[in-house]
Amino acid sequence: GESVGLHLPTLSVQEGDNSIINCAYSNSASDYFIWYKQESGKGPQFIIDIRSNMDKRQGQRVTVLLNKTVKHLSLQIAATQPGDSAVYFCAENINLDNQFYFGTGTSLTVIP
Amino acid sequence: DAMVIQNPRYQVTQFGKPVTLSCSQTLNHNVMYWYQQKSSQAPKLLFHYYDKDFNNEADTPDNFQSRRPNTSFCFLDIRSPGLGDAAMYLCATSRDWGNGYTFGSGTRLTVV
Image (cartoon, rainbow over all chains, first blue to last red; front, side, top):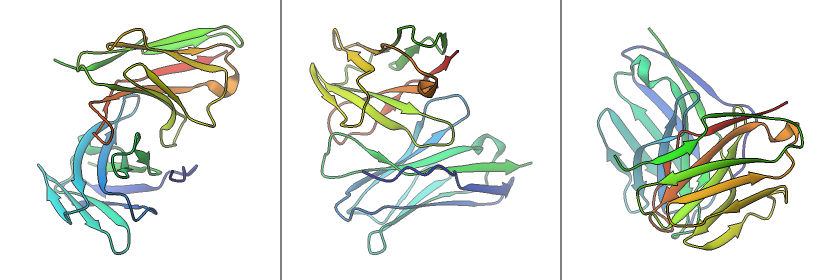
């Protein structure tokens, strides 16, 4: 499993700017990754996923980049809006394992 | 809409008084998970069911139990809540191993 951090990294961006949220993973066998968005007081919501046979995947205003060489995952949000303010978690799965392992999470604050 | 529903959204219980949290799903997913999430931390898996097969995480306290009487419902029982059990409890489902999760909105448990 992955470590669970006690201190949530934070990121503040101006409305309209692009945001980049990073996630490092430790298991080179991880082959499926998901980014979740969690707003205050709510459950996590699926944003975008990527499998290890890809290095980039795009959705609406979001892009996920996967660098397997350095075991790094990033979420890019274009034209960040106040509604994007939330905690973002990356989660990884290893070979159809019975659970996903969550990263520490990053708190994104969008400044109007 | 198909979804994962958790009741109640907020639960206040007394120290040591048993409490049950409920989760229902209309997705007909095979797997149901219970996660505990404390402030500013990643969700921590307590246990999960694949159909009727129960899987307990090694570090889940005995104080936490679960029941899944049918495909649609899953319950989390906390036999003697302590102050340290105050947290958000998240229910999630997935179609199968290695599939992404659909989360409920969570139940915020307060122990007084």
